[in-house]
Image (cartoon, rainbow, N blue to C red; front, side):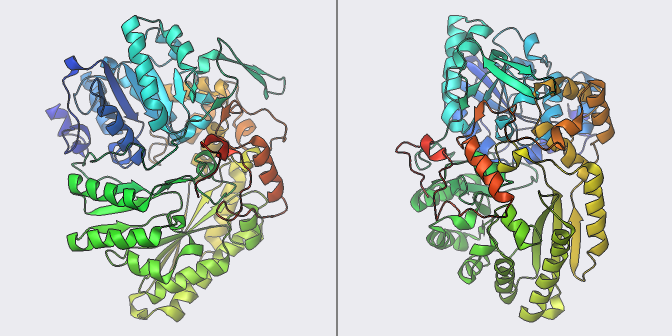
Length: 607
């Protein structure tokens, strides 16, 4: 191992032993749990959900949860050459020594990494080949809302909040161990846990046109798997300390979660629908958790995290009391996910007390018509007013996020992106107190990907050729001084759409792509679009069928038996409203009866 580490980049990724990592005597635990993140250490250690579940599991005296990350390509090559299996960071034991092997599914382009990690750890890839209770493979996370492309490889999926379902799952597993159940007996019983989806207990039939005819549950499995949610975030488990990495990671800071869910209802946003209903933490609990984590970890920055931070009702009071703690200790306070329509002078002044970094505003579309189509509920005036406040306060670095390829998009909408950037540049010129410093305006345009469980799940993605044409067009017109234009690779967005709306027939294509060397697909230097397309073709599957086909409103989706709590009828209503650019008020102003509140005791969202 020492010889290998001297030959790879960032060896600190692979040695463990960080402050806050949990060590236990493996002879004194009943269950060894591998929490696997199918990406590099730097990405894995930045994920708040993984930190929460790592702490929750290790709070149980009979469970030892260890972290397993995907090695970078140099380390993997060295490990395979030396015959060294993938291992847990805490013990160094191979993945094959663990009872439960659980992956978090944060993005579709990590799916081949799951196969690669199982193979590197000496664990059979196909669920059918793992016949005993040991090496049970489980998954959760955002991509579990369409689990079907991974049905061949994964034994069960946890739908919804992991904190709510995890201990029921591990308790049942330990009971099965004690009573020597078969794997099949365990899976049948696990399917009775609300929020647990066991794909092998469902039979899928298809129509002659390739669409799904029906999904039939067997062995008493529920017809619809309803997600689980944490009812009260104030009493939810939250770790008192984090593992502190020994090397730089993407988000190297402490975090507290303001609320779960989002009141806004942007029609393209999967998280905005799948994390409903809105549930908030109290200011008092947040301050206590923040101070505890900072004291126990030594971090010098803390982030107030949520899908839309500036929508937190007690943000003003929270930031005030947080700054009282942070300023004397030289701790930076970070407020990500700010919205242009709620950015204020007061908020700006609080943010810059500890650190003045760049500001980011998600405009999403270049015209008001298209912003109404996607129900963004912000105006150009909101964006310019936010920039005016920032520039008057001394900022000179602003990032603007857009999407291209949105439903109903026209050339006029693309021209609108340039128009907003010009107006922001002019706004700086008339509001800055120091022109000599200059201004940096970065406009980034990603490609729209239609996601399951959203109103746009019926919409076709632009073809690769059309996305490239739009990118070329934008690159040609974005010539404004002080504006840098960035764009997201169209090929990765196309593959993301293919898998995001995929069915279980895709498993053979994912397997074949992995066999041909596809892995770390979320990294540009590793991604090979042609290999993926050839894998689909060799399996008799047409990627366009999944990505660029407009779906009829009555189509049965591969994920229809997985419920995020929002009614499909509501999603259809929102899709119909989008065709006329009609907006829907956010949840803070009017309930839209989406159905998610039924998941709460009492049936009322906690806005």
